[in-house]
Image (cartoon, rainbow, N blue to C red; front, side, top):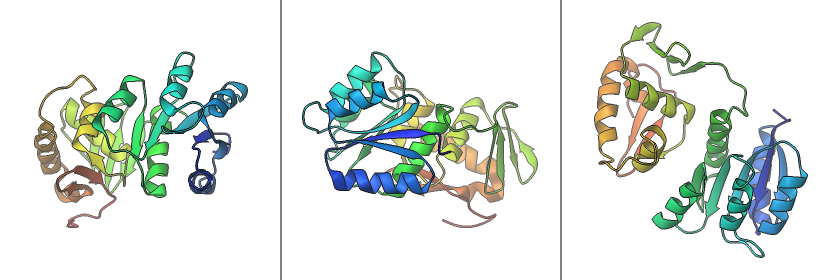
Length: 231
């Protein structure tokens, strides 16, 4: 894993160190830039950067401009950090090709989990076609789900939803984020459609249904729960 390079860009040295330390503990090679101009130069001067964690409000060149500069030449995954919770900011980020959007303050452990989820989706983390947690196993190549060794019948969208949950185990996912990732960005329907799919999925998971935890007023989280465990 130490061959995976992550560029952390933030004008606050304390924030850079915090993120650096948590990523380094997981074995990643972490590079740091204190402003947007430095980040762009470092990205193009350094071979093999697999992920950029990018603050928006910075001197010399803000995160939006950094993203625009890099997106002209590269599809490297980008996670945006911001101190503002603004829907327009988030929308702008996704329009620029941002992969994730995290509002400060945040849990460093959750940020690392999201970073690893992005790396898995971009194939920077080498994984096979199997996902396994809490007695549930997904074979992506065979498009098959098993619960405690028994194959269950799921629809295409239920399969994608469960895969997204398991790839982001332990991460709180809003309904809007799930819609963006599973139903794609151009979906304009009711976010509550996710609740219907989750209800059907839970019924099919049986004793393992408690792996999908409801976060009231927000969305869902997948945990590695035992059979029959209650949230």
